[in-house]
Length: 272
Figure 1 (cartoon, helix red, strand yellow):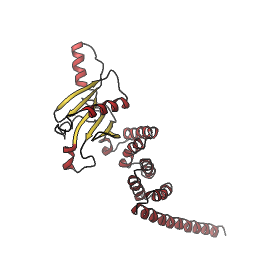
Figure 2 (cartoon, rainbow, N blue to C red):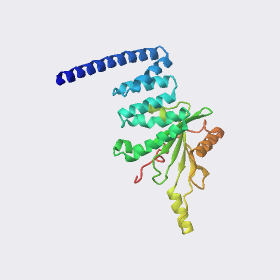
Figure 3 (cartoon, rainbow, N blue to C red):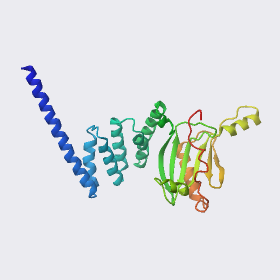
């Protein structure tokens, strides 16, 4: 008798599960239809529900993220990516785009949290593909006709000890095909911790010289220091300094683009 009850309960459970799956399928088709017809608010309301169910179908989160992007809803885009990560925690692309999405949504607390989570994930990873990408895009902003992408390095390593990079693009901006990237990558501004300069200064003084981070410009015309810092500057200080420099740089449009000239001055991993 007990066995028959168990079988009956299992059958009911399977029927309920099948009905729920069919209902989710119908709702998903509705979301797709709304998105295709430009009714993005209606589509996103359904994707909010479907992505909160813990579905293992990764294409659902991809669809939802695309709908959020079409609606320019950065917060939802970040939320859908984080829900995807609960199902696929090793999705590097999803994890690496969450902090920027929160930043563009204006949620500094969530942007900071997700940046720290990415850093912890990167440091703990033994995947060579993950370790080979020691940087994270954390911000994007406009300065006049130019678009600036801010990149935070996961480690301060190598001879130049780059901590942040600010890549200035224009008139076209990423994503770009390879043949167009060099022509539109106007310049790079980096926060350096130059170990070579520190070594020379220490030798001249016959004592260990303190590290003085510098904000340096890398362009098609050369490498120049824009600003010296006594200590480690906050990101907000760097962002303001970069914004002012780019806004006041009257020669930016006429200078040759940086292209790949300074590709060696970038985020690195200790030991490289």
